[in-house]
Image 1 (spheres, rainbow, N blue to C red):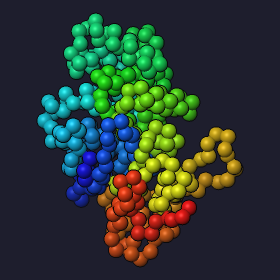
Image 2: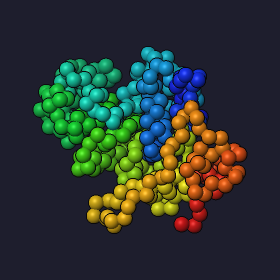
Image 3: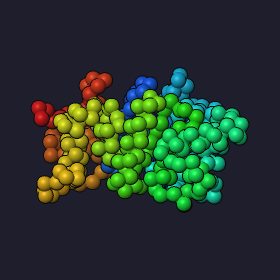
Image 4: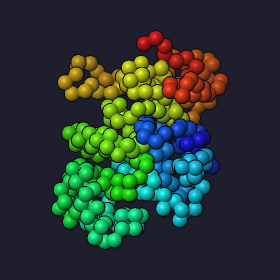
Length: 315
């Protein structure tokens, strides 16, 4: 992905929900996009498959196997979706067809994209359901007859139907209870290990990002402000926003200290009224006069980078 820009119209023209995001994903890699609501992580994820609303203006380049997905005709893109790149949505109940049985929905993907005969599609559907921990009889049920975790597993099975190279998962555990979240996280780990799938994960769940992904990109106000390994970023964050985000998280179960949570002061700027200079400066205790003059660029190496004039060092 190179210089992705996503603009939406408003009364004063247009605003950038995503403002110049670039990253690379090699085969088998995994990257988590993390940040608070409105940071641009879901918009970035949906851009890859061109699933944003019609009024979104998307520019930049999203290259997959030498093809720019943003420039493909709709007919060509339809062939790519599912077969090369697939999506797991945050709300499986909304993503699944409520009046079609689960098995028929998965089989339809196989018949359209893999061109399987009906009997072969049915057999493959059962295998897919079992691969995500669901019994064969789930194929005959409707979405409303399944629990939230079962619906998410069914959606993952559908995404895996045509053996795509890349899975894009947008908040795949956000609508689930804590126990089911961990189960779905374990399922993703298993599938990554067995199928060598490339994963792009948009999530606010730091633990999930650390468990599933080799790299983490922290987004703030439509831009990447820090990039690196989960071990480095979560143990020694360099951007003040990343540090504040981690301090605001509740302790893990069994690790509570009774201390009060420490949220990041203030709130994210509205996309159509962002301050000049560093976008985080009005909320940052390390802000200096130069932070108001120019916007810091992401700098560092391909394995670790930060967009800050005064990063935290030596933690």
